[in-house]
Amino acid sequence: MRAGKVVSRLIDEPIWRYDYKGLAERSSKLAYALGRLGVRDGERVTSLAWNTHRHMELFFAAPGIGAALHTANPRLSDEQVAYTINHAESSILFFDRNLLAQVERLAPHLKHVRTFVMMSNELAHTKGNVDALCYETLLETESPGFDWPQFDENAGPFLCYTSGTTGDPKGVLYSHRAVVLHAMGAGLNAAFGFTPFDVAMPCSSLYHATAWVCRLSRPGGAKFVLPGDKMDGASLHDLICSEGVTFTNGVPTIWTNYPTYLDQTNQKPGTLKQVMIGGSAVRARWPRHSKPATASIRCNMGDDGNLPTWRHRFGDARSSRAWP
Image 1 (cartoon, rainbow, N blue to C red):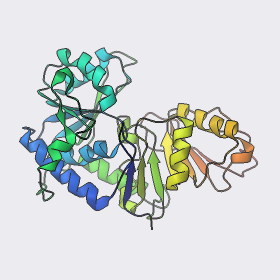
Image 2: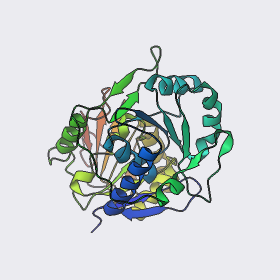
Image 3: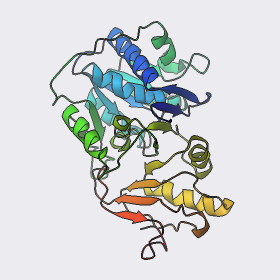
């Protein structure tokens, strides 16, 4: 059975594999490390990172000790990224290795950040001019038995910012209650109905509304595949086929490029059954020779990045000519 497995692509490192138990243990170690770094209840921690297992661990560790995780968007301008980190008043910045240059540009403008942590192993680690700590070094001396505290369900676990199209980016603070209810609702059969036999691959970035579905597949025990920073057609197709991905999501750009890749290489999308697309409709055609017989596409036209409002089922003569 695929249940409870996590597979993660990384930056300049081999693919990482472990199970939910390993995820829990490493998240516990990270919680201890955050405490030793001085993070307290109510503080903000910022991540500038891609879809990896380390980033996912931070999703549990920071909110789990009562802090709020601010997921900064590396695709914004330096000025906007600095604005969001300063506005959040984050004390620690976790970042992926290939974002070091951006972090070095940002550092002189960050008013509250006292510690930088590169999310890498010791071999790939470099301090840069921000004297960054190594993520794996922080974890190796900690124990997995963290005593998770209890706090108000309305406390804020995640802080996300808009893209700043109408002025400065605006912060949106989630509540633990909302996150749990969303996960429970999305796991229902009438919604996504994740089971231990599903394999979910979030291609919506973890910094984009917490990847929409990143917290939704775990209650059903689904296997989790994290694509890192590689969202091109070839890289995604490799993971879909090698890991047996059944569900994925992402913005229209990704799911415009992927069917184009399939068409150019005369391939089929393997085990893929369902795609959730957010933001706008996709205008690319799915190649007829590569349409999966049972797959469907859910497309969200709203702003919340979560609730799908439109569904396309392959094989329906009324909608099989093109994507929505």
